[in-house]
Image 1 (cartoon, rainbow, N blue to C red):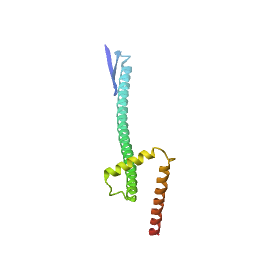
Image 2: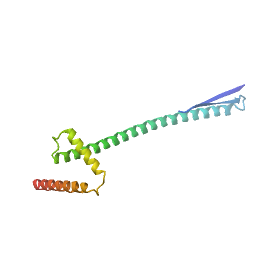
Image 3: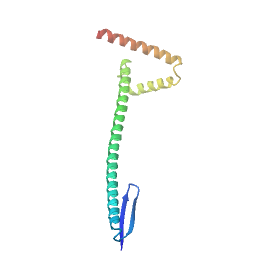
Image 4: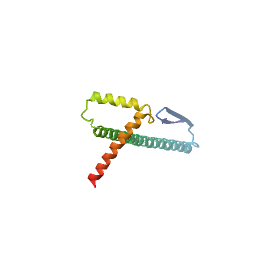
Length: 146
């Protein structure tokens, strides 16, 4: 007479099972019961660990999703802030009511000129004019606020 004990292990990647064949004799009876209880205990430990791993994976996925959402939100806020600043400069230059096509064409010409770098005379001229206008606006703000 033989005793068959099967232990099954499942993971996300594969399933494995082992079958232990033990002789049934009066001397082996206690060992037999000990092996069965040990196999059952190990199987239970395995299932509990697997459940904990699934819970941890779900928590990790949730955390990563939240981090991605925050990163996208931060990037969107930074982009919106940059767009508002550019809009303020367009307003300060008096171009808010300009024709869209003409404004875009002018901005494209500016972009092409800026490719020459900060050493170009045109860049230096524009920078001086712009810095002077910004300083004037800041001076006006301080005098009206104070």
